[in-house]
Image (cartoon, rainbow, N blue to C red; front, top):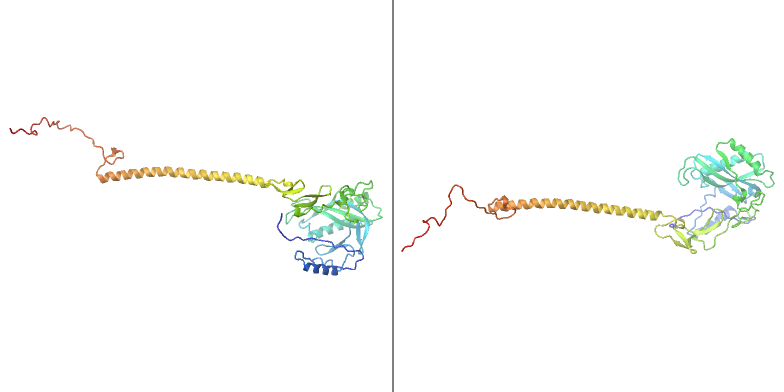
Amino acid sequence: MRAAGLVQASVQNIFAEDTDQTESTVSDLILQAAENDTDISVNNSTSDLCQGDPCGIASCVELNNKHFCKCPEGYYYTSLNCTKGKTFLREITVTVNDTSGLDDEHSLNYQELHDKINTFFTDALKDTDYKQTVIAQVSILSGSARSLMRAAGLVRASVQNIFAEDTKQTESTVSVLILRAAENNPDISVNIRMDPCESSGCKYDGNNCTDILLCECKTGLQRPNPFSTCNGLHCPDNCIAENKKQCTRDSNGASVCECLPGYKNDKGFCEKCPFGYNGKDCEDQFQLILTIVGTIAAFLILALVIALIVSVRSKNKGKNIEEQHLIDNDFQNLRLQQTGFSNAGAEGNIFPQVRTSASRNTPEQNPYISQKSIPRPDY
C-alpha cells in the first residue's frame, strides 16, 4: 500500500449531442465545484489549445503545442462532426531519435511521433478515400522503458486506419499501398498486420470482422457503449482497494478481480503475505532471501568478532604471565639485597640455605680430646 499522494487524471466529459454547453460554461461549473472539494483540483492547461470547442462533437486532444480531434472508435473526424467509417488495424515500427516522454501525449516527442505516423499514412493512402489514422497504443522496443532519458530506439505503434464507410479498399489493397510506401521510408516498417477480430475482441464471423462496432463480442467481453470495441466485463462492486483488491485484465482482455501486490487470495479474501514474501500472489521471495542472507552475514560477523576477542585475550594473558614472572624475580632479588644475602640457589626462598664443609688445611679438632678445655677437680 502506498502513502497518500497526488494523482493526475485525464477525463472526457460527454454531454448530449444537442447540448448548449460550451467549453467555457462547463469549465466554470467544474471550477466552482472544485472550490468546495479539497481533494480535487482542476488543471486548465488544455484550455488554450482546445478553447472554443474546435472539434465540435469530437474530443479535443491536446499535444505539446497543438491539438487534434478524436472521434469514438470506428468513426473519423470531419468538419466538427464524427462520421462512421471502415477501420483497418495494423502495427508498425517507427525509428525515433528520442523515446523519452512517449507515454505522455503532452510531450514534444509524442507530438513528433504522432505527426510522423500521420504524415506517413496520409502520403501512402492519398489516392484512396482514406480519412484518418488514430494511434491506439505506443510501446518501446529498445532501451529501458523506465529510464528518464532514453536514447534513440524503435517504437511499436498500434494504429487504426479509417476509410469512408463505403470504401472499396480491402485489407489486401491497403497493405500493398502501405508496404510500398514503407520501402521508401527508412524510419517506418510494417511488421505485423493485426487481426481485426483478435484486436477488437470480436468473434470470428467469416467476414474478417469488417465492422468492429457491430460484431459479436467474445465470451467474457462486452461493449461498455455502442461506440466502443469489446472490452472485459466490469469487476464486482467489492473489487476495491479497501478490500485489498484491484480490477485488471487477463491475457484474453477479460477483466479479473485480483488481490493487490503484497496480498494473496485465501477463500475469497485477500490476506497479507507472510513474512518474507511480497508481490503478486506472494510469489516474490526477495525479502525472505534478503533476510536469510542478512542473518547469515550477521552470524559470520559475530563469529569473527568473538574469534578476534578470544585471540586478543589469549595474547594478553600470555604477556601478563611473562610480565608477572619478571616482576616476581625482581622482587626476590630486592629482598635478598635487603637481608644481605645473595644466594642464587635459594630457589625463591628468602632464607638462604646454609651449607657446611670441613676445612682441608686444619686437622679435625675434637673437643673431647683437648684436655685444656676440661676443668679439673679441685680436690
